[in-house]
Image (tube, rainbow, N blue to C red):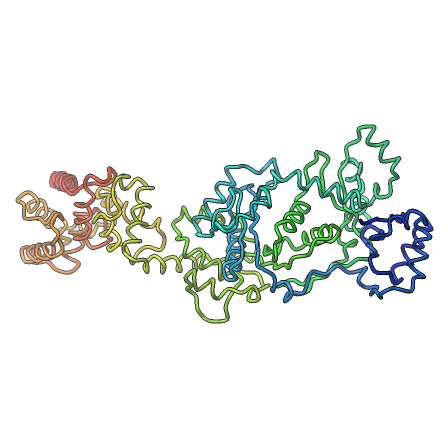
Length: 603
């Protein structure tokens, strides 16, 4: 059993002893806690109750069976050495807040956690931090899960339970992984901290706190809680509660204590706890615990070995370490990743364009390309390699190779990388990608199979002209459309419409050939051969070749001045028949062309 003897800092005698005993040796089984100014004594219940606190301190000072204690250990709280933590079984977590869509910065954090877990055969957990009840929604949570699945970042334990490994049933004992469902756990630990003197009720109103902030700023001080309620007596506390005054619970930040963080990425980071912030809130007046308290408790109970997260969480670490230390939990190691900046060297935000995974997905990026690119934002393996399979990333990844320098998000490089991935896809996979994209854009009916010859033809014709899967929408829309009138009116085709341009002559040949059945309509598997033979015949008949032949033919059959090979366009139109209502078939093009020629002849 453990007895805790409180020494009041408001009492002169107590102050004397609490100052003096820090340098005293203590016997086995007795420890001094600087956070709460208390002794922890095991097995001395009867003895302690009979001699009293002051006499006990004297005996502690006079005892002959003591072991030395370094005074500095009372004034410093350190995370364990990195090498020590790296020997532990790997258990990491990605803990997003469902207040919006998954940002690429969050996706990178998830990726680094996933790679670290998979490389070391560890456990990757997905925890939903939804304590911000006013902004957190289940729809946002579902969006987060959907984006992570699309990226291929599977988790071993998440909000829906064990998902990746049937041998991890023991993880269910950790309880729910939505913080909104863990309130009973947090309440228990707030009560524990309160009973041990680490937290206290604070009755300060918002108006009083605002007044303190203004006064501190006016005097050049860093705004923080002034500790008004820290020394209230039990009687004063009971009086406030009886009067119905709302209160929060604040953590007593220890004086003269430094926090030493051995960060895997940033090296050693040291804070003076008291100078950094005042006594901070752990539970609001409505009974809802705050973010930093929940995170600390969850990381401890879930036995997280390494916390891998963004640099912006660095200052949160101090509060979390204080809570963990007060409760006697072992501290994890930490790796705070560099920020992601826009090309103007400011923090990546919506004004830089797409920033969420869902946006990049909608714009046509492949998950493989986005994963590859995100991995290289703040990490490298020391080689010149740029393209990695998922297996290669897992094998090469190391937290020690993370950079502390900010990473610049280069959208052009991502597009280039995505284009390389698209062009290297096996034809079967590419056809599936094209089919899904075109169905999404309603350019193909939902019943059209991805193995259809149409998708194969589109893949072949557009392979070198796309960077994103959304480019297929643009390319196919251009192929399906026939803007002859618009092109003519724009003036682009002015040269072809002259007598020397050959448009009218070649258009009449095309119409006549279509009507007499000699035009290659694209329905034959041997279409390309037939198309070349037809072009040769037209060239011989009109005495035209090169651009004087091909440009007028392109305008007449596609309504445009540029695009894929005209013969391939005719083949695609034939294959698309009955598979979309957003294209102009060959027969209709011929009718439009014939009507256009008739109008021109009347001018």
